[in-house]
Length: 277
Image (cartoon, rainbow, N blue to C red; front, side, top):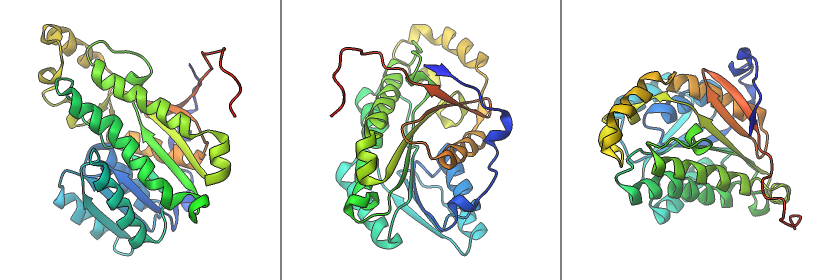
């Protein structure tokens, strides 16, 4: 996996016309990166944005609607780990919006001590949301096609020993998303799939961090690692995600770090497999 740097100015949204009139869904949109992505989409001209989150953030939702009175902001309280609930949520969104053009899956948690919950939300939630969106986006089902961006992490690419469970879910997201980006599937559905892998980002995830790790004896080293990380803001990451949406490149995997977007060259490692059917 070879990162290829892009000049800093490419992270700036050069035109907002590509989002104008589009309908988008953001999971984990009540705070952090998800909320910032929702704001960016609305500022870029998206007609309708649906936010799916288990958390409430009424104050921010009121501000969001006040800032964009001519656009539709739909709020759905739902646990992304609830497969049937997520399916019903996308059915409701599709009926209300008419069609779905963009899905950005951000919802995730960090708590390596709660293995099952971490797996169900981080990996299961991405899978639930992605698969629930397909019937309403795919051209083979009467949709218009579109793009799904799934948020992984740099620790899904390179192991970080202090967070093995979280890292495993993020690695799974990369593989899941790349599988769906198969060219034959795109030719049928018209849906593109992209993975973004942010570096350390200032969100609530860092709250009580050492209380959520599996190996408490690594607490001191964990603090040293966290202190050394070059952290970026949720707003920085959201701007980069919009830049990725504009690139519209099926199957791409990007690192987002230092307010910049780096495409990765994902080389095949398994040379013995037969050609894809």
